[in-house]
Each structure stands twice: as structure tokens, then as C-alpha cells.
Length: 238
Ligand SMILES: Nc1nc2c(ncn2[C@@H]2O[C@H](COP(=O)(O)OP(=O)(O)OP(=O)(O)O)[C@@H](O)[C@H]2O)c(=O)[nH]1
Ligand SMILES: [Mg+2]
Image (cartoon, rainbow, N blue to C red; front, side):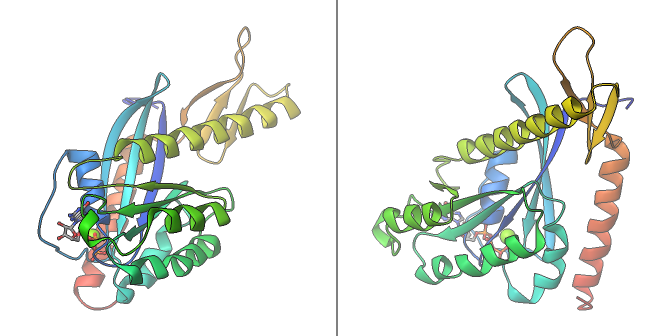
């Protein structure tokens, strides 16, 4: 636990067709950067951002998947570790909206059951080229019981809120899960729930104190897996 500078580590994943703006959304959110050119992501990439959510220091690891079909075998390996998944489409491209059921089926198939899912209709700044109405996105999300936002990675519109809401929802869910598990075994002072360590506080209510995996180890493991996948992808093995 030494050297940890955060209370909670969360893993989010963005999926969706190629060109919808996944990389741009992540780069804007994490680094305040926007790129006009489309350089397709090879396999998978990630960025980190540390945020304060309701007083907790939250380290967010955001996985950026390639939308191209040929990388699906790589990207599917990352669904399971994500606590939140954003399904992204481009409001100026009907076909990317039509692909949502495919992406949602992958999430349902490969992610954990309690994964928080949000739909993003990106490129909201290009109203004149819109092919998918706001209402269509909203109705699709409502039908599937999911949150929905229209965003713009270019002008940063609605950029923070989807990420913030998703982190908030994951933390609330984990807290609820942890307290119910602690209540069911009040004699145990410390319990691990998934990657989260919950410590029973003698005088106060149960406290969520952080991810049980050491931050350095965790980042090293992530980078190792990431590097080897990138290598295989570049060699055309995957
Ligand atoms: N106008 C506008 N363009 C955007 C926006 N987001 C992304 N783009 C542009 O769309 C193109 C594709 O963006 P990327 O972020 O690379 O797309 P991606 O989903 O990561 O694509 P893959 O990596 O191939 O899956 C780039 O030319 C971006 O500049 C946006 O909100 N508004
Ligand atoms: Mg990309």
C-alpha cells in the first residue's frame, strides 16, 4: 500500500466503430488535447487521469479500444476488467449508431454483470451533418436502461459529465456492495471485495479505503500486457 496517492482505482473502457472519436474523447478528457486527423488506434491504448469525486481521490484508467473489426479479438480481452464501458457512436454517421446493438452485445457477453454502461453520441459540434437525432439516441439508451449523453470531443461539450457520473455510479455501487458484505459478517475487521479493500471502522461507518493491488505493480502489469498486445498487433499476429 506504500506510495499510493489515490483512494480508488477505476477502469473504464470505450468501444464503438472506427472513427467515432473514442481516442479524441479520451485525449480531451485526460490531457486537454484534440487531434483533427484520424489515426486509427492499433489494438488498445490507455490513459490515466486522477480526479476528485465527492472527496475521494480517484485514479481513472481509461482504455481506448480500436474500432476496426480486425482488432476485436484483442479488445474483447479487456472488457472483463472494466467497471464501466462507454459505447460511442458518431451523430453524423447512421451506420455507427446502427452498430450499437453489436457493441452492447459484446459488453453483455464479455463484461461483468454489474458493469456500468453509458452511450455517447459524439461530434455534437457538427449539427449541420447530423444523421442521428438526439431522440433516437435517447430512446435507444432508455430502452436498454442506460445513460445517454451527446458529446463533443472537439469543443469539450458534455465531456466531463459522462466520466464523472460513471465514476460516481461505480463508487456508489461498490460502497453499497461492500457495506452489505460487511454487515453480513460484522465480526470480520477487514474484507476484500474484488479489488477493493473495505476496512471496518470501530467508531464510524464502513470506509472504502482503496484498491488492494499496489499501484506500482498494477501499472506495471497493465503496461506489460499492453506492450505485448501492441507488439503482436503490429506483427499481424492478432
Ligand atoms: N468535429 C468533430 N470531430 C471529431 C470529434 N471527435 C473526433 N473527431 C474526429 O474524428 C476522427 C476520428 O477520431 P478518433 O478519435 O481517432 O476515432 P476513434 O473512434 O478513436 O477511431 P479508431 O481508433 O479507428 O477506432 C478524427 O479526425 C477526429 O478529429 C468531435 O467531437 N467533433
Ligand atoms: Mg482510436
